[in-house]
Amino acid sequence: MTKRGQITLKQLAERLSLSTSTVSRALNDHPDISEATVKRVKKLARKLNYAPNIFAKGFRTHRSHIIGVIVPNVSHYFTTTILKGILEEGEKMGYRVIISESKNEEGKQSEMLRTMMQFGVDGILMSLARTTKSIDDILSILEQIPLVLFDKVSDKIPCTQIVIDEEIAAYTAVEHLINAGKRRIAIIKETENSYNSEKRFAGYQRALKEYNIPLDEKIILSTDNISLEKGQEMANILLSLEHRPDGVFAITDSAAIGVIKALKRQKISIPKDMAIVGFSNSRSSTIIDPALSTIDQPGNRIGSTALTYLVDEIEDPKETQQTKTVEIRTNLVVRASSFPQERMQANH
Image (spheres, rainbow, N blue to C red):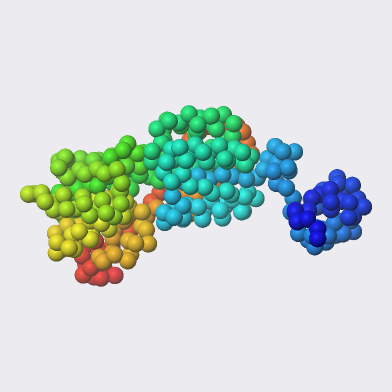
C-alpha cells in the first residue's frame, strides 16, 4: 500500500519525464511551453489531484495571495455580512481568505495576529476586540505587512480604516424620534470608550443640541455589554424614573429589542408612549413585534471596500504610507417601533 500524501511538483515531473521547471511553466501556461506539453501536464495533474503548495510558491515570489481576517465574533449577523463582502471581493481579485475569531479577547487577538504571520499572509483585515488596550502587536505587524481596520477601529493605529458614518447615522436616528414628536430621548450605549459608541453618542448629543433639547444624565445609560438582556435591564431603569423618557435610541439592535420586550411586559404602548430606534438592521429587527426602526449598516459593502483598500496597499506599497479613514453611508429604516402603523399604512 502506497503512503498517502500530497503529490509534489517533483513527482509530477518524474512521471512525465520532464524537468520540474518545464512542468511548473506548463501549469502556468508559459508561452515557451508547447500546447501539447501543457495539455499533457495538466491532464496528469488533474488525474493525480495535484495542487500547488501556496506556501512554497509564496516563498519564491514573496507573495502568498492569502489575506488574514480577524473578527471579534464570526456568528454575529452584521459580521457575517461583512465577511461575505470580503470573501466575494477576495475571489474576484484572486486572493484566498483565512478567517479567525478573537472572541473579543485581546490575548486571543494577539495570538491570531502571530498565527496569520506564520501563515505568510500578504495582509490583514481586522475588527478590534472590545478589550483591546495595548496596540504594540498591531503596530509591529504594520511594520511588516499592510493592515486595514474595519468596523471596530481606533484612531491610535496609523492605518487605513473602513467605518460607517457613525455620528451622522446616530444623529439621523435621534432626529427621527424628535420629528415623531419625542422630546425626552434616552440613549443606551457602551461603558467602555469604543470608537463606535463614542461616535454614536456624539451624534445623539448633536441632534439634541440642534433641536434645543437639554441633555439629562438620568437617561444616558451605559453598559459594558450591549445585549438583549442588558437592554431589558436598562429599560427597567428608565421605567422606574419619575419622569420617564418618551423615546429610546439604543446603539445596537439587541439592546433595542431588549427594551421592546421590557416595555411590552409593562404594557407600555409602542411607539405612542415610548418610541424605539436601534442600530444594525439585524434579522431580529423584523421578527420582533412591533418591528424595529433601525440604522441599516451595509456590511457587504464594508467588507468589499476593506478588501479592495488592503489589496491596493499589498500591490502598491506607496499606498500603505497614505493612511485614510473611509466612511460608508448608512440609512434609517423606519418601522412600527417609532412610527404608528396606521400612519405608515396611510403613507403607502
